[in-house]
Image 1 (cartoon, rainbow, N blue to C red):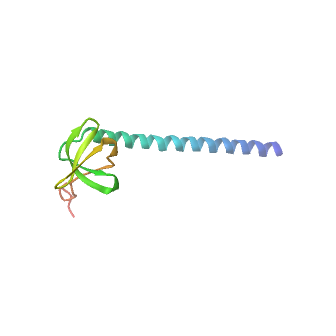
Image 2: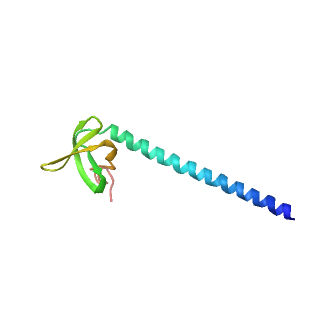
Image 3: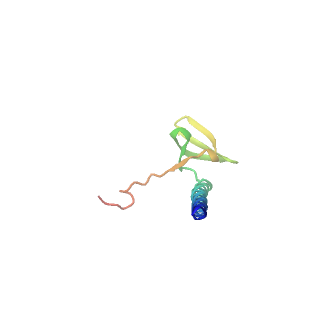
Amino acid sequence: MNTAQAGSGNLFFMLMIIVIMVMIFWSGRGQKKREAERQARVDALQKGDEIILPGGVVGTVVGFKDNAVEVKVSENVKLTVLKSGIVGFRTNATPANQGGTK
């Protein structure tokens, strides 16, 4: 009886390790997918696009320099930020503009 209990304990331990490995694989896969989508959007930036910077600062792209973007955040304020510092993208489309009805 002791051997049967030890065998079931080992089986449970092995199953837990497999479940944990699958969870780690899935979470890493989703993160890589999101990062690839973000990088594709950064690479496709054009003048006039609105972006979100750390801290919630929203600005409009006005130019490009090597690995950086010039962003207009106010009438007389322009910032130069690294492309890696862009945390989000703002779209001007609203449900009404997309043809949705309420």
